[in-house]
Image 1 (tube, rainbow, N blue to C red):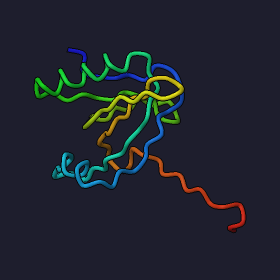
Image 2: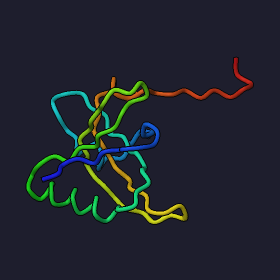
Image 3: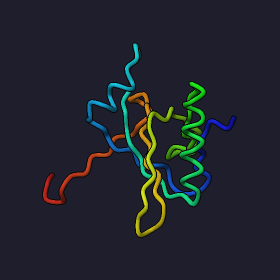
Image 4: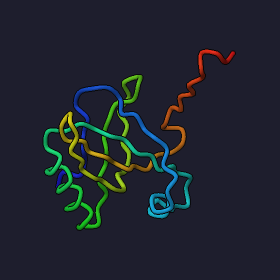
Length: 114
């Protein structure tokens, strides 16, 4: 079984913090993890969703494989997935579990702030 979604081309995925109770409840663990969300454009969204569901049905873990900003391979367990249609095409929304040190937090300050 192919239990991974690999980002082959394009930039490193952008992860957004998730603060909903349902997302946090499905990631309970004795270790410290964060739940984050990312949006990916895809040509075969329905196939990717079906692979996720089949993997989960067999009680296995589905992973997102990607390269970080310095080119190192990373992987994160996928907790949930949803397919959306947009004007740009299909968008795959993934909720993944990561250790806090895996995610680079970017702080954007207004130009007026010093």
